[in-house]
Amino acid sequence: MKLAYGKALTRAGSLLVIAAFLVIAGATAGSAETGGNPKQAITLTCTQGTYDIVVWGNAPWVPAQDANSTLVFHPTTFGEVTRTFYPADGSPSWTETEPSDARTVEPSNGHATFACSFRLVEIFPEGTLIDDGSLTGWMSGAGSR
Image 1 (cartoon, rainbow, N blue to C red):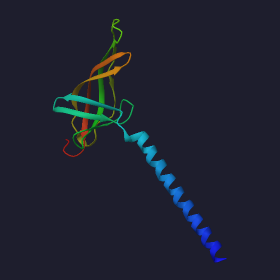
Image 2: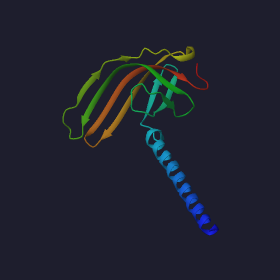
Image 3: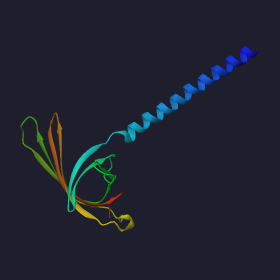
Image 4: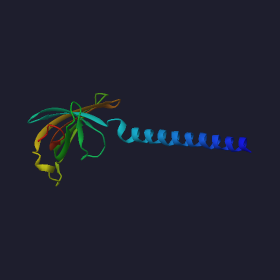
């Protein structure tokens, strides 16, 4: 009887360890999908310096982390963005301009806003897409004000 009881506990313990591993592995995989890889790296040229920011989401108002510090950039206004596509086959390029878009959220704790510009170049098999634009925002994190 003792032996059967011991085997049952060993089997239950093994199942518990396997279940815990699957939960941990699933949580790690899930976090890697949503926050493990940056969605976009962009250089911002701002009135107070240049920042290499990393955007971790795909929505326009997502804060972005400075790749070289603990600062986080919070956008408040997107200026006009001029988007030009140059087809790989040499056919004529096309350009469109997206209007500016402002957010009504004020910076927290009195952080000053500042203006930035960016140029984003993305290369696809079909051609090259270049976005030129401006935005305004504020920084949070150690050393911001």
